[in-house]
Length: 166
Image (cartoon, rainbow, N blue to C red; front, side, top):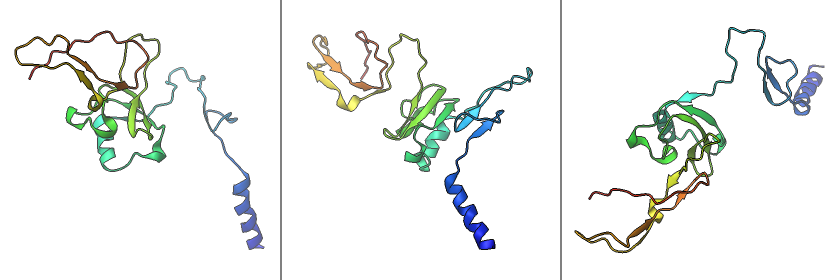
C-alpha cells in the first residue's frame, strides 16, 4: 500500500504547477507581488538586489554570471573602480539599474525614457577609421577619426571635439 501512495505522489508533481503570491491569495502570474494598502506606515515595493560594480567585477572573475543568469536585474550602488571597468562591467560608470545580457556577456544599464540626450553604450575603438595624416607642429585640418559605437539610443551626435595630448 505504501508503494502505491509513493507512486501517486511522484506523478502528482508532474501534473501540477504553482504560482506564488505576496500579499495575494489569488496570484495572477508566476510571481504576483501585490501592494498591501491596509498599512499606511510601511513602504511598498519590490527591492532589487543592490551591489557595487566592484562586487560584480569580482563575481565575473569567479565565473558567477553566465547564460543561466541572462536578464538578471540588479541595482548598482557605485561604479567599479576605474581599473576594474573591464569585461562584464566595462562601461559601467554610474549607479543605476543594470541587467545581465548573456549574449554580449555584459551588464547593460537600463536607460530612463523621455530623455533627448544622445547616449553611447560602448565605443568600439579597435574598429576606428582615420583619414588624413597628423604631423608634428602642423594643423590637423582634413584629419577625421570615425569611432563606431553600439547601444546608442538613436539620437544624433553633433561633431565632437576632443583635446588630444601626446
